[in-house]
Image (cartoon, rainbow, N blue to C red):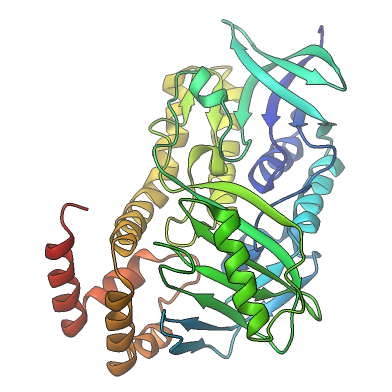
Length: 394
């Protein structure tokens, strides 16, 4: 094609659309490719977004949202532990509507969107990058000065470009359900429900909710069993529901840039390993990527040396947080139900959860400090140390 874009963005999730919005607002010519027929189609996500995220990125605040200021955690035995704050800590948003709102804002600023457009390859040249695209049953080529990969987890483009692949991930399974008498987020733990991870029931709109779980193996079977459990308890009306599945990265790519290319969001592994949430971290990194690309466009320099600044910036903010979360996640995966119950009991007996909620630093989105604070309790520290010695090597 004769037309050259300033930036081409592969993927119209929150990170991709926000980055497109930022660059288009700065006056750059931006093209976004989305492989699905419409933005937000078949997203496997609970849509729980922290208040800090919506405050930091208010451009999608007109999306309908349900306030969440409490949650109940269930140990394997069924023993429960409730966390509640008077002020909202998070909101449950309709992810399809949220993604669409971000895409509309980007388009309002002039970004172009191509739907049902699958980018099979990015080919790098000295003065441009070419996207080889399947579009409506035909193939085409588009050119830009820089390309952004924001495809979500599992795409092959980073590997083709020599950026490696995500080394650890988990599988998510979720269904929209009719709920009964549940008005707060519920989290379920236990090897029979979601081995090494957790399951959830999240109210959305009136009488509706999302039930799902994370697991490394056989998500359809575990989700079916979890739905049956909820139905038996009278919390959902039926188990005859449509299920969605997806992969969630637990570790970042070893490298998220090269000449004329950066990777953001789930595609880069910029996700909370504790919960699998990636909207906020992805948008934070998209913001950093937009600044870096703007500087590169101003300097007309798209070398790896110039774009390395993007990775240095996002790692200063997220690398420690992700590493602490990942180590905590790997430790939790090794625990038996009895060990989970024991930790659960210590948290209740020592009122550790109340200490966390009272802390001015308590955050829905930043878990590293909370993890270290829990480990700072004497009884918990001794217990974790004994368990860790019995479980080594992690």
